[in-house]
Image (tube, rainbow, N blue to C red):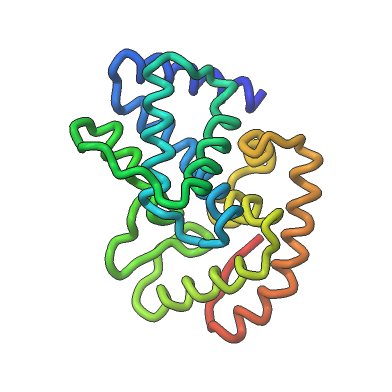
Length: 211
């Protein structure tokens, strides 16, 4: 049911984007930025995704969508492939001229877990809330330390579940896995998290609220 609803929404956004509706493409970017971030983190181990790589992914997606080459059901696999290509390319292509809001604005967003460069003085923590000052530094150190304990095969699941708080079925859909496989991998992630949370909360003085 969830997959069918998402396909219907995304099919409408694809049609609207092809008709020149920039806001519809923004919706697609918002829906798939977490997946692009997760794949880049899995490949690079860098918690903050490269803005240039994120721009390359979504500029490429925009080109494919407007050329009529993408169906809604193909979006998860396509974004995963484009994220791997952006990583493998080493240096992402230069950003296109910012002549359109859709390609320059939506595609370039992605410096942090919420999809844009964080504003000065705040950053999302693992629960998606903003913290300030010294708490900002503590949150960054704590989440970075925790994510650094994960082997590559667990990283994408960590990002999608603990940073973006996606439900299990949506996480599985984006990663192209069965719900049972996604839950099994997330159980391994939970085991690593449970080993580290108490130590991090004590040493960093920050309540992570990971679950």
